Image 1: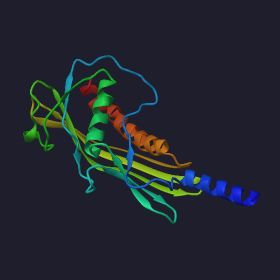
Image 2 (image 1 turned 120 degrees about the horizontal axis):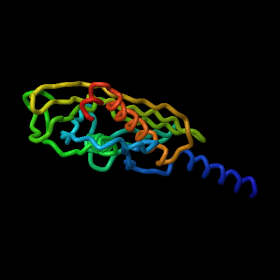
Image 3 (image 1 turned 180 degrees about the vertical axis):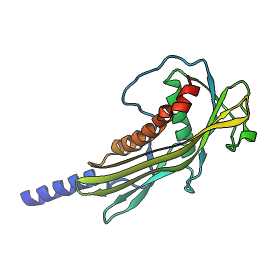
Image 4 (image 1 turned 90 degrees about the vertical axis):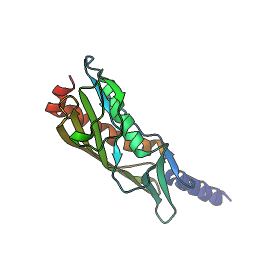
Length: 208
């Protein structure tokens, strides 16, 4: 009886670590999460942000896949859409740096398509990758997160494109399974990608 109880406990532990009990799509809370809060001086600019376009050829709300070795697979999804999540992260990255943000209409990323009256700078872009691959085995889960976005900046008054920056970040780690670990991995990749915008010297100067 003691051995049976020990075996049952071990099986329950394995299921807990591998996330076998979850059914259906798994909802994740993903966002811009800087590790250190370092707000910069407020900018005099008002930056218009157009919704980022989703160019991934994936369902709008799906941002990953969770697989269990020898078991089921589940979609990883976000509330709303992946484009909305990435756009919110861009806005958050700007406002945390003291930059005023206003919403702009959808933009085709061309100079002639800019519509953001009253703003000096318009930011938009296209998501090419926004994905988390999670593969669970007993006592270990392999996580691969990747975010790639083409950010386009336009000078509204001059009606011209002033900068195109390809930002990207990837994370590859082994950990014990939890939904929070999935959220943290993809949020870390998203945050790292967004912070690259402010390391581009030309954009950095424009946003001051």
